[in-house]
Structure formats: C-alpha cells, structure tokens
Amino acid sequence: MLFILDTMVSSDTTTISASSFFGFMGVTMALVLANLGAGYGTFKAGAGIAAIGIWKPEIIMKSLIPVVMAGILGIYGMIVAVLLSQKVKNPLEYSYKSGFAHMASGLCCGCSCIAAGFAIGIVGDVGVRGNAQQERLFVGLILILIFAEALALYGLIVSLILSQS
Image 1 (tube, one colour):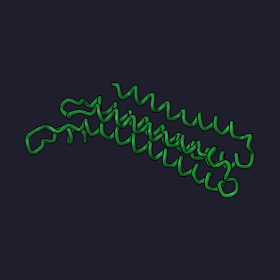
Image 2: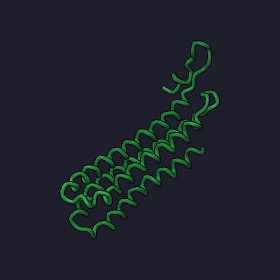
Image 3: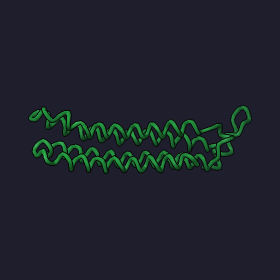
Image 4: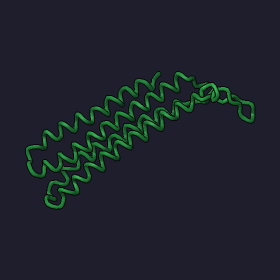
C-alpha cells in the first residue's frame, strides 16, 4: 500500500508522498484519543457527582476534582497535536521516518490519555460516592487520581520526545 501511495502522480505531475499522511494521523490520534479519555472521565465522574448531589449537595464543589483532572487529558492531546501539526511539512521534504515518529507520538499520547481517562472516570465515580458516605476517603481518592493522571503525563513526556525525532 505504501508503494502505491508513494508513487502516485497528481494532475500537475508532482509526486505525492504518503509520509505527511502518517504525520497528520499522529496529530489526529493525539487529539481525538485524548479527548475520548477526557470525555469518558468527565462522563463517569460527573454521573457520580450528580448522584451524590441529590442527598449531599455541600460536597459537590469538592467532588469536582476528578472532572478537572479528566479535562486536563484533553489539554495534553491538544498540546501534542499543535506541536506535531507544526512539524508536518511538504510531503517532498518530509521523510517517512518523521511521519512514523509523529504518528507514534500521537498514538503514545492518545492511548495514555484513554487509559488515564478510564481510570479517572471509574475511580472518580466510585470515590465521590464513597466520599459522600465516609469523609476520610478523600485523601486516598486524591492520591489514586494523581497516580491515574500520571499515566497520561508519562505518555505526554514520551510523546514529546518522539516528536523531536
């Protein structure tokens, strides 16, 4: 398939290279997958907040922490997508190595954010409900959420390193 894409000729007899396709797929994967993780984390934790808000409305503001942490995942994806989109060049000047590295960078950030979003969403939902019943669970909940967010941070760091190649 790469051979077919790599040897295509456009109407103005300029050779079309598929290397920039992979670079732009990295941009897409970083943003879309990170926002998928952020959306799931927000949805799941928000459901828990809505459930406890009915019978204990005084802890709603304190319970918004998982939603904020899930939203940060989308920011990670946006950072990587913007950085990668600035590096994708004209297909004739952009190598396959760069295209594959940028796709790997986007996938690294995006998949890490999905994993973190699932963890933040599930822990946020159960933790917020548990915190409504027992206030001493709050510190443990925050620690677990921090370690879940660290998964996405690791993916962001590796993604930034990959984007430099």
